[in-house]
Amino acid sequence: MQAAETLKRQAMPLAEALGKRPKSHIVMGSLLLAAFLGLTDYLLGAEISLGVFYAVPVVMVAWFVGPRSAFGVGALSISFWLLADYFAGLHYSRPWIPFLNGGYRLIFYVFLITILTQLHHLQDNLEALAQNRAKALAREAARNVWLEREVLEVGEREQRRIGQDLHDGLCQHLTGTALASQVLAERLPAGAPLRADARRLVELIEGGITLARGIAKGLYPIQMQSDGLMLALENFTANTSDMFGISCRFECPVPVLIENPSTAAHLYRIAQEAVSNAIRHGRATDVEVLLEETDAGIRLRVSDNGVGVPDPLPAHDGMGLRTMADRASSIGGQFTIHPGMMGGAEVVCFAPGRWMA
Image 1: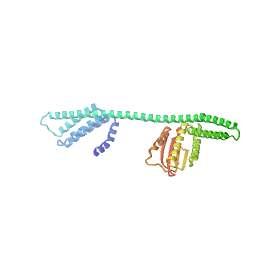
Image 2 (image 1 turned 180 degrees about the horizontal axis):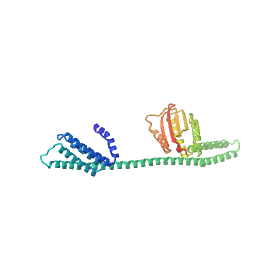
Image 3 (image 1 turned 45 degrees about the vertical axis):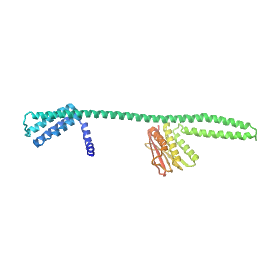
Image 4 (image 1 turned 60 degrees about the vertical axis):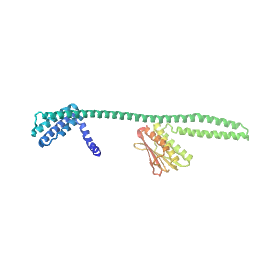
């Protein structure tokens, strides 16, 4: 079995080379091979026959050219074989025996050519089916990528809409409530027990306003300006440091301006998810978010000093990593995660320059 596989691998380059040659060259080469076999058969004498090798040029033409040419080459091969035996001094007891042998060989060639032709047709059909299947799979993969991108875009639009509704609706409503409560507190007599409660109510409402604005800003963090991603990442890292009591800083040596809001939004969400994973799963106390522009595009790197990248990754991490990878793919970028220089994990997303505009 192994020897057959080795022979098959060695024969494939020769078959590919023959398949690229013009059919006329293959026919002429097969005729020359048949003539060479006849000459060799003649020189070896009547005691040694090369009859089995005459099938080689017939097989070549049948496979690479077609059955009609193969029948012609087969007939000439039989003629070369009979002439070689005749001139080599082979004598028959009956004059019709050479014709009978030639007829037997012709029948064998017809059977061989028919089988090879059918096999070649089957191979062509299988190749055509494989190509059609590959094209269908490529179309399906492209459609899946498009669907994933659409899902992300729809989710991003919904988040922006909810954030805007919170800011323009709920925050305004709470602001009006706070003003009404403030007016009520001012109308109450000084020293009245309810006056302190009213002021406390105003403070709680103002705290709700601050919380609602923070949620709205988290859902819709990036403004439409080209420097919106830098400002959003700077605010995000500052809020993360205050909220979790860790060192979370944003580094951007040279200003990175991104005109495409979708690209900026996806990069922000990748940074947000990476920082969240570093804190929740990596138990990091030092996180750095780096944004820089290279000659080829934008590079976003989130590194931490946590426990590192577990091997294998936990099942609950799959969705976050998949989402980050999908976001990177939707902007034509590349996403990687590996052990970092700080001893923890390092998440890197690279977006080509064409996605900046």
